Image 1 (tube, each protein chain N blue to C red):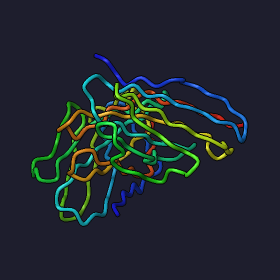
Image 2: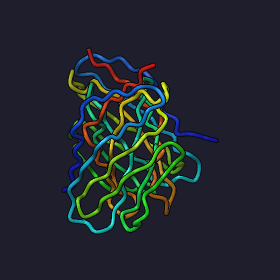
Image 3: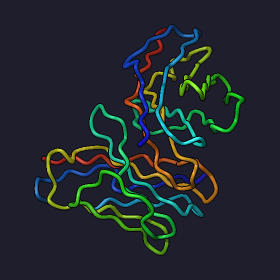
Length: 115
Length: 112
């Protein structure tokens, strides 16, 4: 079974600064997907970024980028130029490569962006 | 762009009652997933359907059942409700060949 661990329950950052959220996972699979989801106070689940394990290049989406270390089973999210609207719960998630597989989530990290 | 629709958005039931949650996936999405998110917790996978057949099953209580209909919408039926069933229930859908799940806004179920 796959497990996802987020060791930072809460983090805070000043507006315009950079913050990194940590995630580690455990799996015996060699190919899989990793995701970061954002859940703002509205409780909507919003996909922030996705990484395919077979790709060595780290995924980036505007101000969001990941540091994917496959051997270490680590998948951190870096948010640059933090904005007040980034305040949310962030979940790291794992999915097996086969189509239609469920998401396994970590416990989440609450990020607060301060002005 | 069309999104996943869930109804109702809020539902209040008493213990031992029955609830039905509905999910309408994005058009041409053939897979539907159900997740349960308790207060302060991460979403937990309940069950999924692909082309109207159950494709995977998670920690779904025997009191719960679900199905996907010919128009691809899905319903989660919950019977003998317990206080611990109070949660946010998400439906997500994905199109064939794309490893990305699009989440609906959720149904907030409160059992009193």
